[in-house]
Image (tube, rainbow, N blue to C red; front, side, top):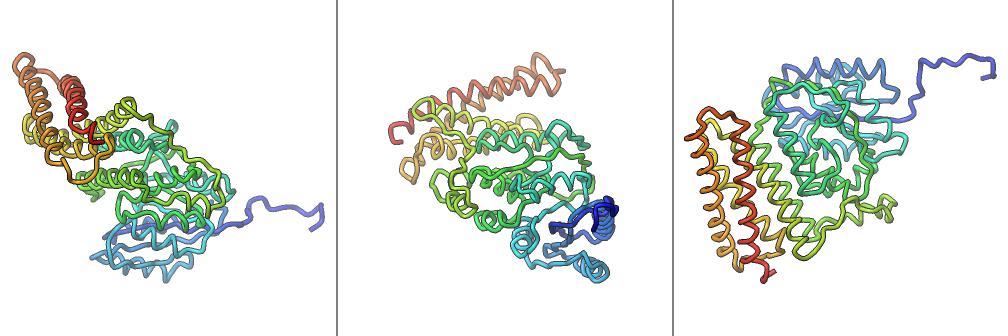
Length: 403
């Protein structure tokens, strides 16, 4: 080409390959329309070579048949079938089998505006970042969803920042991508096969010193979503506890990830925690914030049963989990020795907390029966703070010397 020959700037050079995975379960009604919309958008605007991979998670309807018909008619579409359910399982299998430069995924409902896909992928192609995530909680994001989902999402991400000291803002947005070489090193360390997969992947990436790029997205909630919010929240909290135990016991070989990605000097972005009484207070506060948020999430979910019943069940569940977490995480006590005594002491403080919160609700209902939910929540916050202080003093007396 001579210097005088025109250059067609409308046709970008396709220098990288991207696999976009859509994990699906029983989506026969919406799958074809979503895939065709995505294919059309990528073909018209995306500057990289791409392939759309439909990962069928053991669907029991005609989803797999629809996926195979799409793959037969469109060269850029491929269908993969898994015999077992689990979004994390599907992403792990398809991402590890990919030969693309970048692997990504999005939810089948395309809740996230597709205009965010190029800003998601571009930093990975350039080598600027290792993982990229869409975030609904950053400034610049535009989100349409109900207050219940908004509250649960923000509560969950606050738990991650407090307990696991996560620096990313939105763990569960179904819009993520990563470089394939990073996926090959990091994915074998991720144990979860379902909804906690995203969170575990990001927490491990952060602690390995990998670079996580965030893209504010426009996101519209799918009113037809079949996700069980209570079951998912329970599973996520179990996952958080498993990661805490894994990090405390040194079971996660993150140093190997840094070495194999040629970044042995890359520091973990997780700050240290002070020792002694101050360290115990910091860790107890982290567990306490998590327990309080979990309590309120459970309370709001159970509120239709009545204020007192919801308070009792939510307090009981979080009290048992709180004692177990403080035993291991705050005071460093492991094994079964003294466990019964610790939990009995925890239940005794639970009784105090129950008396404080139930008494507060009774007083509020007696002397201010028309108080709204905001006043009710504020009263419960104060009562829980007082109960939390008493709990720390009691548990420290029980566990500190043994630790």
